[in-house]
Image (cartoon, rainbow, N blue to C red; front, side, top):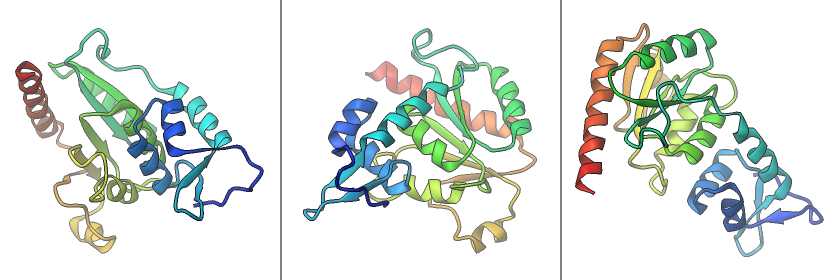
Length: 208
């Protein structure tokens, strides 16, 4: 973590969470992943630059609109985050998702860094991510999300990649439970898997 000068205006993780509208654990995850620069006091407490929090707040204003409905209009819409740096594949995926016969609130990010920001903000039901991306790649993001103390342990994680199984294993492999789709993607199979997750969500909502 970057050390902050003594005279720089700082915030605690709780203050940062209240300002950003997210849980303290989300702020801690962002700090650990490098999304928010921070340092530790002699007593082990995190301190975050206020300027970094303000910058992150500004960046969060650039979210893309949902593809099919909104959370307010369709409370039971499936929230899906796509992390992909190829603009062509982003457009293709958006077009495919818009044709699915169930409501999807789609958000996108172009690397793992932005993905963590969107996850903390949007709390998606499913994350679909590429692996090879500039900056923080999919491997780093997935490892951050699947740490034992992560607040996102129950998040459904899918990978879309052109890497072979051997190439993925050479780079450390994928965390347990992550489902991998090879490119070119079998969108029919992907839709079936996502739809099952959607119906499971509806059942949980009904029970509540």
